[in-house]
Every structure is written in C-alpha cells, then in structure tokens.
Figure 1 (tube, rainbow, N blue to C red):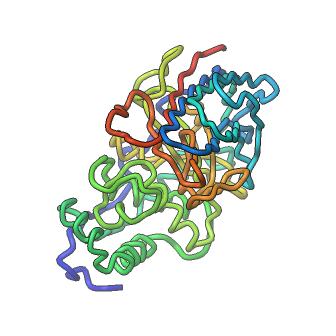
Figure 2 (cartoon, helix red, strand yellow):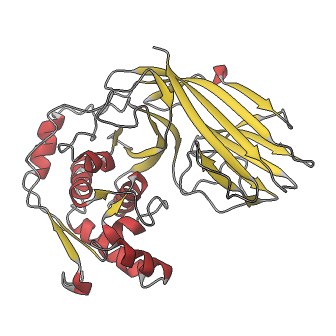
Figure 3 (cartoon, rainbow, N blue to C red):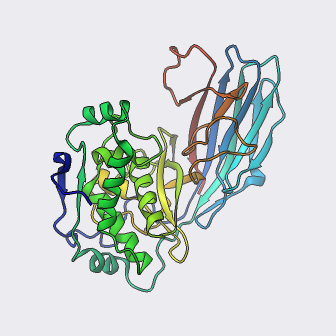
Length: 364
C-alpha cells in the first residue's frame, strides 16, 4: 500500500464505531406492506426505423411476492402484442418489438406487490453483534480528490491513472476488513467503513454504476456506495448482489404515504448465502443515522424492480450491458435511445426517446 502522503490525499479518520448503535430502531416500514405498482412508458420514436423495448417488472424473492398472473398491460399504438421475458438473474420485462412504420407508443402496466422482509434472523441479537464487531475497530480511507470534485472530473476526463487510483483506495478499504473468517462480521465492518467514510452527495460523475467516483472523492449516491461495497465483497468472498428499485417515501425519515409518484430510483445490497438480508450503508450515510440502522433490518419501505449488474436483459440487447436498470430501455435499429425519467424536460432531445414514470397505491 502506498504511503498516506501519496498525492497529498485528504484523510477521513475513524476513531471507533461503538457509539450510537441503532438499538433496533429502523426507519421506514418494518411490517409487511402491499401496494399496486403502476408504470407508464411513452416512446417517441422520432426518425426511428425500428424499435425494441424492455420495461422492468418486479419479481418474486425471499422478501417480495408479486402476483405476475395479475399483471395488467395496456398498449396504445403499434404493436399491441407484448411478451413477458425473464433474464439470467430472474428479472422480468414487458418486451415489445416494432417494425416499420414505427409509431409513438404508450404502455401502461399495473401489478400487485407485497413486501414481507424479515431482515436478520441470526441467534445473536443484531445490535449486540454490531457493537461487538465495530467497537474496537478503526479505519482510515484516503481519497485522491476528497476535497475537489472538479479535479476528480478533470482526472476522469483525461484518464489520469484512474484504475491505479481506484485500486489503491479499494486496497485501503480492504485493509480494514478481515481477509478470512466470519462473513457476518466482515459484512458489518465493510458497511461501517463506507458509512463513516462516505458522503451521500449527488454531484460530479456520480451514479455511473461502478466504484470509481466513490474511490476518487468519497462521495456519491446509492450506486457509488454499493458498487464499492460489491467490489470489496468480491475480493473477500462475501456473497452479495445489487438490488435496484424505489423507496415508498422520498424521505426515508418520514412514513410512507398511502399513494404517490416515484421520484427516482434507489439501490441496496443483498447479502446471499447464510446471511440472507439487505443492507444500505448509503442511507445510513445520507441520514447520518446510527450505526446499523439499515443493516439487517426489515426492508419493507421499498420495492425491488431488478437485481444484478451488467444486465443484458431478455432477449439480449445489442447495446452495452446495463450496469443497473430502473427505467425502461429501448433500442432503435440496435442503438440505445435516450432514456428520460418522470417529468424531466425532453425539449432538447432531437432524436427518439423513452420516458418512464412509476406510481404506487397501498392496498393493505
């Protein structure tokens, strides 16, 4: 590992984690919740000779029950025929393919979803486990551009030893995690290192579906935190995967409403194997929440749409794999078209685009 003076890194120090443990006080919904998810996708195929469209549909897992048999799909425009496909991760898609002449399309679907996450089910009390694991630990992460997002953007633009910089920071994170032993305690320590060292800030080159921005600046959104977590987890053989969906409340500190529009996506990490629960260090950092607030707690305050990274969908897309997926994806003549979410302005988009919006209504 390089010396801490290397490149004059800005240091963020941790001097112990035992203070302020969550004390079984998760934010959000701990009880099961049932909602009807409604999606609307508008395709404006300006100048497109052909069109292929994939719309993600939530699926079943250990924490979520989706009545796919009750999926209702309505298509305005051509074609009216669609199919439900499934990729290698078990993600589901409403899939349509259109031949010339390509017309504007509006597709709507509605599906019931029930969340019944139980969280951590181990024999040792969770708060006690977190405190005993983090109480004697300490970690230091040095970020190449911890004080300057502008310099980080310039470095990315000119590709100045980006892989070396990222690799060095990942090594620094890894140094605070035991290389072997109890997966549960490895997961706790890695969660805490990212939570305490990271800042939930949406600026610069965040949200690209990799660990680069977080490792350069110590900043980012949920994807930056969690791709970094997954990169380290892979190095220590900690079974984990990305899950992407949306929160039922735009503010995780507030109760979920009975209905509403979904303002944007959110992702978290699911720990596989013998662990079998979700964690969310990005929201702990965003809220400056007590240690373990989103570690192993029931995750019924969100709906999962897709899981996995580097998605190729089904049938396979012709474009590059998607690092993660939340909104609809479309290709014209095999080329990805612009994706827009919600009420974002499309007036500057000259070519074809696809707009996605989601809303939900509680039905419990």
